[in-house]
Image (cartoon, rainbow, N blue to C red; front, side):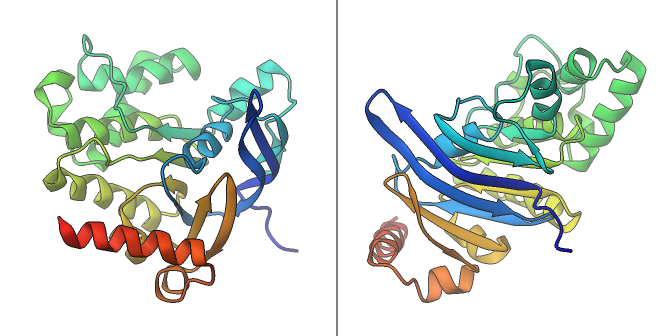
Length: 252
C-alpha cells in the first residue's frame, strides 16, 4: 500500500469576501519530499501555505497532516496538529528582549510543556544544527538577517515538526546571506524533513526541489520535477512567468 502523504491538500478554496484567492487546490507532499511553490505575486502561494496550519481559515476543502484532517477538528486537537507543522516566515518574528537560546526555548516550554533543562538542551542542539550554537547568548539585534532566520528555523525544528512550511524565507535577506539559509534547508532535506517552500529562489528550486508547483490566479497551473518545469514547461502561463523571472535575474 502506498504511504500516506505527509501533507495533503484537497479541493482547498479560500475567499476573502467575494474575492477568490484559492480555487480548488489539490496538492500532495510525500514524506521527506521538498516541494517548491513558485508563481507571480498575488497568485495565492502564501495564503495556501498559511491554510496548512490554519493561520488562515480555509473557506472549504481539507488539509491532512500525516493522515489527520486539520480542518473541522476540535480546538484541542488543532493545537496538537499545529505543532506538527513548523512555520518559517519572511520576517523572523524573534523576541527582541530575549537571547537567542531563550527564543528557541520559549515555544517548547509553553506549547510542549518541556522543563527548562530539556528545552535548553534541545535548543542548543537545534542551534548547533543551523550553525549558531556560538550565538546562543546573543540578542537578536546582534545577529545578521541570515542568522536571525536560521534561529527562526531552529525554533521551529525544536518542536519536532513533521513538516516544515517556508514562506519566502530569504526574501528579506541581503543576497550574500541567502546561501546560509538555503544550506540549512538543503541539510534538512538530506535528513529527510518534509518541506513545502514558497520562494523566488529559482536556482535553489532547480537544484534542490523534488517537485516544483507553479501557481497563478489561485490555481495550480502545473507541477513536476524541476527539470520539466524549468526545462520544458507545458503551459503558456508557466513559460511567460519563467521568462520574466530569468529576464529580471539577468538584468540585475
